Image 1 (tube, helix red, strand yellow):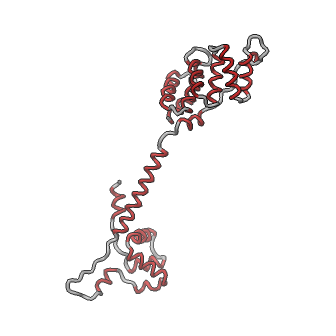
Image 2 (image 1 turned 90 degrees about the horizontal axis):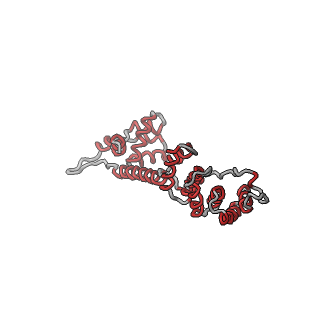
Image 3 (image 1 turned 180 degrees about the vertical axis):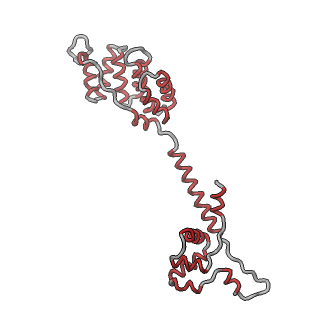
Length: 259
């Protein structure tokens, strides 16, 4: 704790004088004076009770008040008797507890909000569905060069019917298990439907290749790992994307800073 702050918290203050009490209750005290009096009232039950009694009875009674030193001089002298002004330890303890509570709240906030967001939260922030870029000529099931299941799956994917798309891509993969476009869009469909193991398998196969979807598959593998809560794997893959500096570099750098 800062030394000056500690001194301000635990330093005792003198009791309020007769004149200070009159000025405070009469509204004639400076801003700094009011602050000092109110700080003292927090620590001193004796002065606090005196101010409260005067406020309830009326400020005119302040003319008859005396500070503690003047009051003590009027007490009858008794052999062995000692007059002791009560020390506001209770007030100090209360302030210490208050400071400790503030520190505890700060620590709680740091532990809960200072950490980076979890994987699914980052997935929700950075994920964007991939827009279909398959040529129109490959979307017609009646075309002799197009797999009918693939054409129907692409149509379902374009309509954001990812459950049906995943099922149709699965059928297409049974006929063409190494087709890059089928693997890529199947992986995206599985990602959308939270079938993360199958999504990773399909996208991983594409990312290992050298086709047109390889680099894009790498980015969506990051999304897949985030959605699965695998932040370490996502971080390692992002580092490779940033180092290669070929696709989604700005997004990758921004996401990497949050991991």
